[in-house]
Length: 240
Image (cartoon, rainbow, N blue to C red; front, side, top):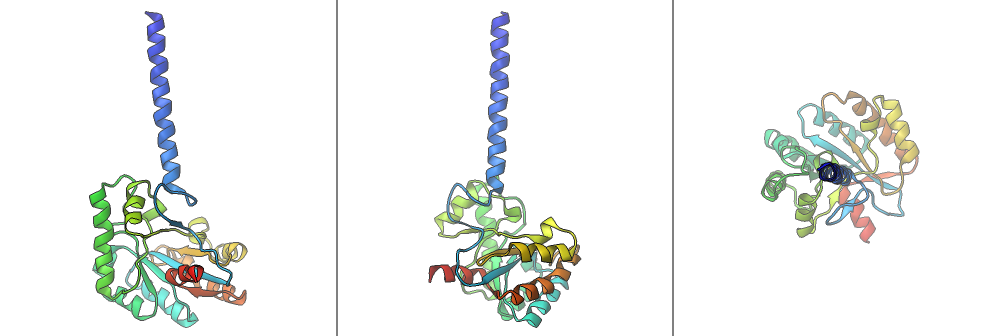
């Protein structure tokens, strides 16, 4: 009896260990910037020219997107805005203005929920409803997709791969690691490389330090000989 009990306990512990290990592995994979189960994963683009793509997540947001667009206009640089569908639905004029100002709209899902354990039908709805709103704003080129929080596991990459769409992440995210704008600028200056994709969240009201860093980052990179392109332009440079 004791032997059977010990075997049962050991089997239970082994099962728990396997399940826990699988959970940890899946969690790490969902956040990985170097691999995913299906499709193409883009965090930077190998190019020889000194170019970078500046990207913004989570907008458009009244007042704050206006501020960002004003800075970009003053500095004469173009960027890619990864927008959420619900924000575009609330602020369609802002989405249209982003395009009129020469920038690019990317898809950041409709609701900004984590897309790790979503059903296929929900993934499709999150992506396609937002695509339709971006098209309605006037976008005509490719629409790149960036998952909320950068997280994905199987369903989302599989969906995108079936439609020949890449998962676009980033290589530098200064306002996620630093709270003071001088540190953000220094981080960019020390780590930027040709083909870097830079992520900022400067359309979020609480990210005042990121907004303060934005023009300083742009000027620092310009002084170092970098120019700014959209994600589509960056990827096209690699293909040419």
